[in-house]
Length: 213
Image (cartoon, rainbow, N blue to C red; front, side, top):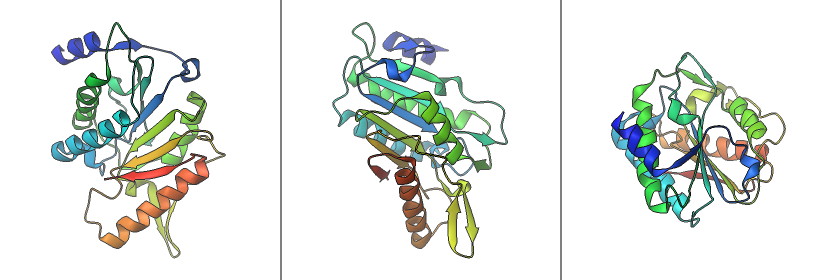
């Protein structure tokens, strides 16, 4: 409760604002609450929070810019942390860029507090995200996922469900964070996952697709 009070004092929260309403920068962080996500490990979660915070701050985030939290679609659990369904606007009456790292770190710590799913539906997640935002060259999407739980092995190699349409068309970037980081995956497997998800980002329409480690 204390943490929630502090967070609310720092940031101005908007419960149901459309992303298209703000012409500033928008940073969307999607949490994939699957059992293989490295973010539910305290050390890895801290590292992931640091990676995302540094990347966001590199874009010179300021007043009027937004951080948006969304949960990935998945089966196998009913609960989702409430902190992952909100929009945060930096405001003269609330938070500044200096508060961003602490806020992101506290939210990623939520991975350790909720039931986890065995499988992820990342394709569906990106499709639904496309309904929730209007991409611009100031829209940056981060997906925290191991990725492997969303893939299938075939004779031709790894595949993932195809994204319908181009839901992230116009978005400046899609960045995958944590790919292949949890589980006993060799370097070949990690490279295959990286290649697959970079392709997913391209097909979803993002202008640039990256992997952060």
